[in-house]
Amino acid sequence: MGREFLDIFESWAESYDHSVSGKDEQYREVFRNYEAILEEVAVLSHGDVLEFGAGTGNLTEKLLEKGHKVTAIEPSKAMKKLFQKKMMAKSNVTIMDGDFLEFPVPNKVDTIVSTYAFHHLTDEEKAKAISIYRELLKTGGKVVFADTMFPSKADHKQAIEKAKAAHYDDLAHDLQTEYYTTIPYLQNIMTANDFQVKFKQWNDFVWIMEAVKQ
Ligand SMILES: C[S@@+](CC[C@H](N)C(=O)[O-])C[C@H]1O[C@@H](n2cnc3c(N)ncnc32)[C@H](O)[C@@H]1O
Image (tube, rainbow, N blue to C red; front, side):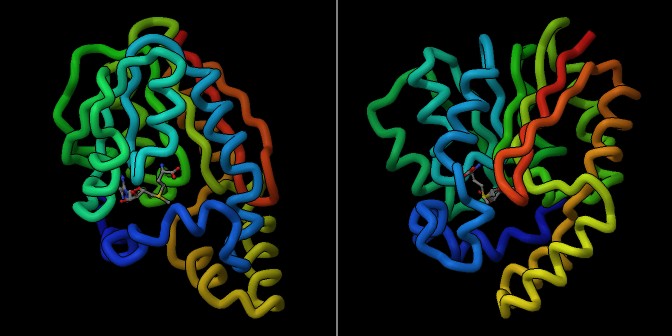
C-alpha cells in the first residue's frame, strides 16, 4: 500500500544515483549530505535489519559493510533490478517485493530502517505502519528513518513557496503532492507505540528519526 508514486521510480530508476550525487539542481539541497545521512542510519542500526524502499541499494551497501544481515523490501521493478545488479555476489542480503504496509513478514528483527521513502505513506498509513513495526521489533529494537519532514505545517508551506520562487517546479510539485509530515506528528505516533524518539536535522529537508522500543 502507499504505492501510488511507483510510476515515478520506474522512470527515475536509471538516473537515480545521478540525482543523489547532487547533480540535479532542484534536488541538490534534498540530497546534500546524502552519503553521511545513509552512513549515520547504518551506524545507528544493530543486529538483523529490515529495510523499506531500498531503491538502488545505497543504504543496503552501508549496512552490509557494517556486518548486518539485511532483508530489503522494494515495490518498484526497475529499482529492484538495479539493486540486484549492485548486490551481485554479496551475501547476507535478500530483496523481496513489498511495501511499507504489505511485505513478507520476516522473523523478529533488531532494526527497521528507511531513507528518503516514508513520505510515500499518508499520515494515517504511517501510524498503521509503526504499529506493525512495534510487533516486529525485539525489545530495545529501533526504527531509524531518514526523510524529508518539517518542524511545523508552516515550515512545510514556506518550503513550497521557496521552491516556487526559485522556479524549482518539480520540487514544488513533489512538496505539494507527496505526504511530507511534521516532526510533532511523528513524535506522537512513536510515543503512542511506546518508542522513545529523537530527531536530528541533516539539511534543509532531511531529518533522521531514531526511535527505540521500550
Ligand atoms: C527516493 S527513493 C529512496 C531509495 C533509497 N532508500 C535511498 O535512500 O536512496 C524511494 C524508494 O521508495 C520506494 N517506494 C515507493 N513507494 C513505496 C512504498 N509504498 N513502500 C515502500 N517503498 C516505496 C521507491 O520505489 C523507491 O525505491
